[in-house]
Length: 543
Image 1 (spheres, one colour):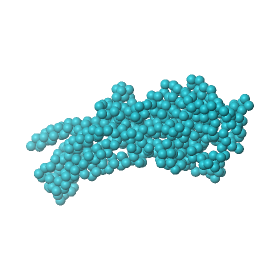
Image 2 (tube, rainbow, N blue to C red; image 1 turned 30 degrees about the horizontal axis):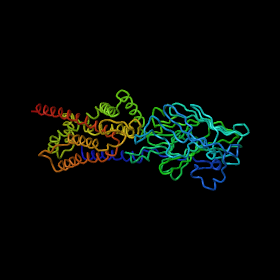
Image 3 (spheres, rainbow, N blue to C red; image 1 turned 60 degrees about the vertical axis):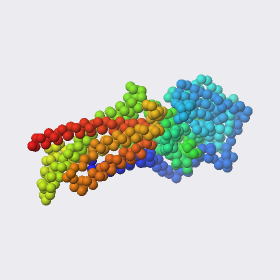
Image 4 (cartoon, helix red, strand yellow; image 1 turned 30 degrees about the vertical axis):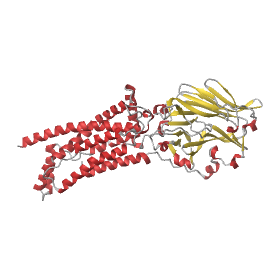
């Protein structure tokens, strides 16, 4: 492998690494252009924490519509199944917290509490022809059983407002919102303003995964935390919307008849929030929603059959099908051997086997190219003034020794897209969260705390480079000696460079590369032994 090729490989990896940090996060789609008529009808109303005092004065509470002012507060209304515990309050009929019972937090001391603020998630604000009604200002009456809670307001014996929550499977709540005889309803907001839980230990870039992701006009539209901090809006026909961190999400899925047209995203530090606006334009409503509150798990999200799995970080778009295939294979291996460290080692071995013809050809060509260098130099001296004869004899030499000029590094480059597709799978899938391996490796989703694995990976890379490096011979000219010095510098420099990069990457990813390097070293030793024997045979035959 010559100097230019080595530098090119380093640049490719650096570009890939930087892209994974800054470029592969799916950018927000440009907002749909609105006609003057449409724009004049749209009024952006941010979530309650950002409403000015002047606007606050125009809000009324539910007592104006027959609600009782003496209903006692209850902040401990609970719906619970084997997966989640939903804690609700009759203050607005909102959710105080969702506890993921089977998933522990990053300190491993308690279950994950999905909300990071206590605003009361899923508050409702109505905009009628005459008033703005914020239900968070009123304690509502309620009834509940083991699986359903219904919050309501009655006026003169007639139920004029109702919000009902029912537990479903797959970490999902079914929600129905009904209203009647409250005046002409222009629109209403659903406020998701309690943020979403995130892991930050071991991942300095945790906030780059915090987003609002929506399916707008049949395409993914994303607002990251930085953009949300200054306020951002999504317009269009919105099929679903998600508050998402690296491993957890809250998905709002309206039924098809619900006209979700506008979302306003905002942020308070690392708490990302959204205000969902529903168009109504009539005197009564009967709307249904699904709220998924749980892990960013591919199989769970795919079960909804609406593309929620596309919110996951699978890297660069052309490589996402490969990333999904790798994830399925990894989970299948884990189903047979329930240890993700061993599963990654087996996955690395499988990938090595798949690419064996390419890597074998590459390593063999590199070894043979080194061995023909003395003969090539002799030909260059013999045919110094005849380039056509030199080209002919060179190709003849390559053919005799089985050297392919294009077979050195090209096969290695061909497999890079597959390796890049592997990166986001091992970087951000929840399967590796808290997945231990052996001894000091208690969590494959975070960097090795003692840098042992990155150092071992660097050592295997050093031996791999050493096996591919050309040895100095007495008849080398100045140009060849200069190339040899460059190779030696790369042989020592590249492993150090990669250790520096890999020390901050998840241990699962480093384990993959470490295993792959070991297999490559074994392969190169085998090839080296065979090519040396073949070279001796050719020399004997020539004599």
